[in-house]
Length: 122
Image 1 (cartoon, rainbow, N blue to C red):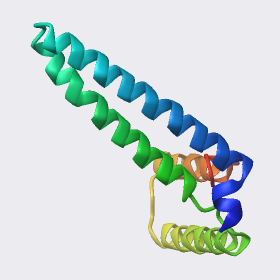
Image 2: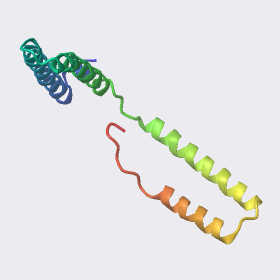
Image 3: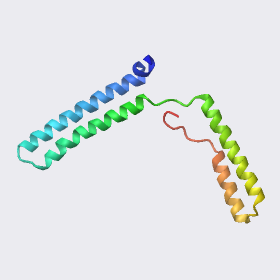
Image 4: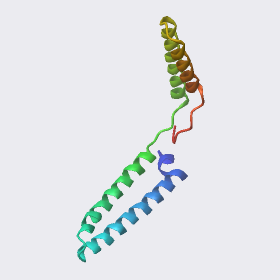
């Protein structure tokens, strides 16, 4: 639990959240001041900035609690994909398909075999 909240990445996220929230509070106060000076549209903006702050809190929470994929999960995913690929090939062998469809399916299979881009946290 300690590394989740006090790792370098987590500390950077905490600082980013603090900067985000202070900016949202400053903007809300500024817009409320403009609204009290007679700019009625600024009341909407004064309400909007706390909503942005809350969205920042939700994003911070999601980034803190994101879990990395374990080797066992990755292996299970690969095995499942291989199983599905084998089932698709056997189903394709049973069906008579046109050469164009077979070429298209081969192209899709080649695309599926290519290495995937590394996604954030996965």
